[in-house]
Length: 459
Image 1 (cartoon, rainbow, N blue to C red):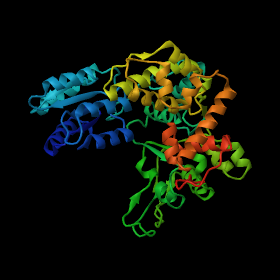
Image 2 (tube, rainbow, N blue to C red; image 1 turned 135 degrees about the horizontal axis):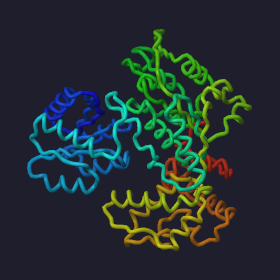
Image 3 (tube, one colour; image 1 turned 90 degrees about the vertical axis):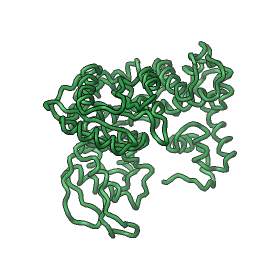
Image 4 (tube, one colour; image 1 turned 60 degrees about the vertical axis):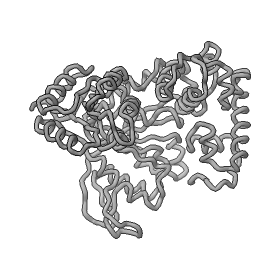
């Protein structure tokens, strides 16, 4: 077959999975198999698929719930439901929720072949590359980056220009501005799309195990190395390796990373065998790396290797015209998850959302909308609902929208929360609706004592 596709089959029935795999591979398609929704979603985080077959009835998950999760990860995913006896009505419901079609059990290899052909013909975008599973022009309009602001228009333009190349990219901007989303868009629009996208959270990995995580290790290389393990470079082979918060990497690991980037080779911990790697490097940071270089905290030669192309993501307070669009998107998704009919925000509530400075950026906005969708009782979210949500925003609703005043309110609120949880930063971040890195930044900005909580941040 000339044009093969990258296909994911999610079904708990081993016989059905194998039958689908045999029929699809025989027709030239690349096939990945998952026996649960959780495993399928994990694969969707690593790979891009042209078509997904999803069983309506999974032992631990409802197929419709998994469908909603898939659409959250990839709104343009082409999903065909596999329906058993007596589930046609539910299959029709799945189509209303975004599935393209359904196929009833039992089915023949020819029926499966015809369905793939029909699904690919009717999907929004055609495959434009002859390699199996590759869709070179998937979502070229950057639909997942929701914005209408000039600042983000420039970002999207740069993505379209840079994505087809193999140049290393450095994403800069505050925490919560969407650097991870941009990294994934660069991958999705690149020639490496059909290969893995592997993300490395440089702020969460233990320093002593970082080298093993990046390059892998052989059995017995160190205490606890009971098996040989591949590193992130090998897992990302042919695809994209994304370093989130690259400034957290220690200087000794920076030196080894520089060698891997320059020479395109790695060696597992405990082994001298050279492994050739072919990956694209994308990095992100919320720190000023030039300043880190001047303080001796970041290698200048590594910086220039990573900073071939630099993309700056503006904070949400500088793109307030995007707030109503983002609110509608997050509310629609959250309401669907909660099974609620929520029409939107009152004009006063939307005005308050737009006036707020959003120090946690898009991530804080998303968490706030999800929290509101849980507690709201009416179809329209009012300013009273904002106040009830018990966030800094609730005070901002009742205050003049002056930046200095809002910052004072935020500091006061953070101190109150930190005190209530005895300095436990994980609990505090959860209550504030932000991630731990953002909380750490705020503690430093407002010169709030770190406290004696048992859950301290790594340096």
